[in-house]
Image (tube, rainbow, N blue to C red; front, side, top):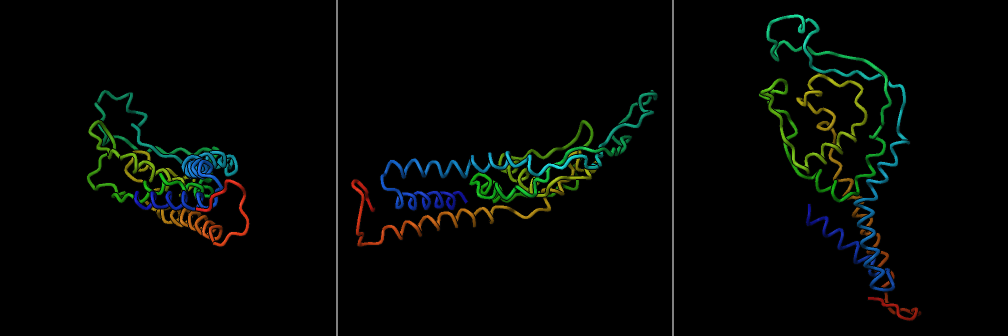
Length: 214
């Protein structure tokens, strides 16, 4: 996938170089195009949050806690005594599933989301108590899980298993976004190469002074 992304960047550079009249301008424009894909998509995603917010939405949140009478008892409480507590309240939620497509063209997201790893939680996973076993994800897994969770949208019902990290239904149940990213990047690179090829068709009838064609 790194090789594919390098190929896309090279294709963008070649297309822009063919369209640009001067070498320096083509170099700067290529850098700006890569920055647009890497940083511009993140900025556009962040600015779009205000467009997808919904206020006063009823949300159910669950978490493990000791029962109320635990503080009055002299017995030592263990993790087996913990109960699942559920609260319902209203809050502002963000429908990120409507704007996550903006991140599809981001090369970092494409590479991270294409990395294969097991998203399933082990059967012997223990997420409660001092002996809890937590899976430590890498940076690529964090990016991929974050994008797929954003693609799933707002979670109106957080279970105790999700609160303790024993489940990740939102991220695990979503399709990968990297194929869409490759399609968008390929279309952009292909379009620039096609336009560049049209400009380099010879013979050329008229050229501005100092303009190159190759």
